[in-house]
Length: 330
Ligand code: 5GP
Ligand code: MN
Image 1: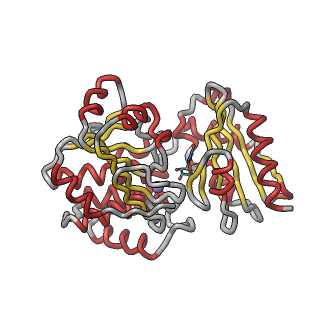
Image 2 (image 1 turned 180 degrees about the vertical axis):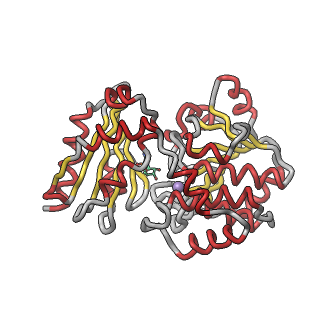
């Protein structure tokens, strides 16, 4: 991993430029959304206008952060010009170009300054300015540092954004990336007036019925491999359609099967259109599944990684990945 912390360059870049675009990865999570809103807020306080444009829609359970639906735009052709005109791209919580989705080509070919803010182990430092801190629990932690460096007061709005980023990416302070700094920052954010109970309710107690209908189907696919050290589930296109579920409804399914006694690694296979399969991997502790994800062209963190497999049926992807994982236990 290249850790290339160009804080000073960043301060200068913000000062000298005016057209900022902020974006995060496809199917954004709480860290992506919270961190990009955090950057937007910081730039606003510095008197700089910016635009948040994402490939994917904002999941329902994060919409409370943008209640008037005015801050985060989903990419459409009409934003093409804005992207082409940008002076600076803030690329948040993304380890590579592909994860930008439909805007990846424009960003790749643009001469604008690319600022990458991330905490993924697999981030190679693909920006012009890279602020990559693998020890950070969430990208939101780095945004918190940025606010402090720039002397931005953390008001209630910014505190909400950053709390969501950190508390979701640490799995509500359960995952192995939970550290002293994450707790310290969130303590500070509580002091600024955020309400953890209310935020938890907004994010995790707002399941759609479609999600639960899908979950019932998905649980029936539960399988054990490597004598119960590996648990897996799968989701077919048909299951998505018949339960009328959205992609965001899947978030968190894998955590249930990671919690089975004696399971070390959990896997979720999601069938996508055009013969693609999205694989999510979770490891309870000692196994570095980022290494496994990288073997198949994916990446992420030691305990949470993902792969997008091209030209595989669901069955083929399952067979290949599970047999690779079995080898870890012989
Ligand atoms: P999830 O399984 O929740 O989608 O993702 C878990 C972690 O793996 C995240 O940190 C995410 O950035 C990473 N990840 C997920 N899908 C992919 C992928 O297709 N490619 C790469 N390189 N990383 C992924
Ligand atoms: Mn993150």
